[in-house]
View 1 (cartoon, helix red, strand yellow):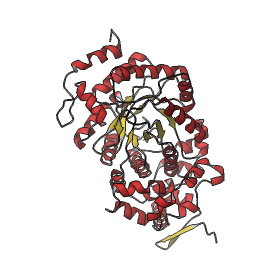
View 2 (cartoon, helix red, strand yellow):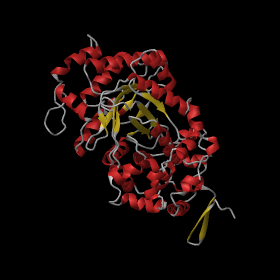
View 3 (cartoon, helix red, strand yellow):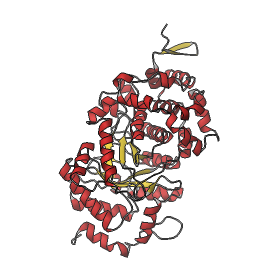
View 4 (cartoon, one colour):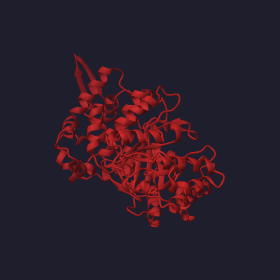
Length: 469
């Protein structure tokens, strides 16, 4: 008999799951990526059998039975070697199902959850998420408080930040400037002003960094900038004296995924040290920005037979290692091959946010979809609202919801205003004060934009767009 196999009987039918990776995959709510990989449950009954089996599994099993071999994968070594046994001790006796019950109880306060973070592995977080309803994911994530800081303070209760994403298909300076201006006038940009460069090289990275630094410094905007270029380009830009605030990198949950992206953990450590040496933060010095997304390991053929949500949670171990200012799941960006429709995107977004927050990350979400997915902006409205009820740290702000460089649909400047108003949320405190001083918002207690272009912002208008703008 295979002692590593798991078994469950439902209605006289016996189900066998040959190992932990198989059990986790079969227990996952249906999604197209796992079906593409050939690891999803064949029927709803098999999925329920796997979820029942998973609920009975002791949490301690995840420390003895890894889903990607320790010898072959530096992410697995990171997870196991840096696990905090003392932090884990209060829940060490629980099964996955009992852990879910505890998370939903009043005993799981914000302080209690914070004390457990270093003791929870990504696989534990992924496992418990698989047996939770959407409302469970929302409730627990809302109790997880994670605060970070660079030039402003992000993640405080009652606040929602935004990444101002002024992408342009040719990196045209005037086009980028117009989007920055538009976003600032709609009170967006406190998480970061972050550009995906169309021309991804060191010279262009430096030009874009200089442009954003000029604007931020001249008008004393309490925010940070980032060019979302490859981490090695950012290291070289720092060596050339560029004004780097944040180091960006897309990350995955296996060593092979990250190697396909062209980096390893040592590269991230080098980049973080380089950025810290610049000492550009004012209220904090968390200098890393990571993006993730379900399906990246599968698309790189680097998933080791592990389901895409568990791979995603493992990416959060990489992020946690480097104490980031910002992390976000670009949840629907890869396409319907991995998340087929609005329902799957919504579920994945809530899972990613829950797992990230449970592990102690400042978790945001790019609420998005590609044009060939079976989804629309109403689906994104729903997910945006659910995530912000769950305490999401930040979302994206893009002119008209349409990224004209990356060609996908996400959330607009107006969407951030909507959710701030309906949920009574405000920008980061330091950015909030700046908005008031610039007369972009009024000084009343409710968050409202002023109706007219503020006189104090006439200078920024001319500066950003040029004399002819």
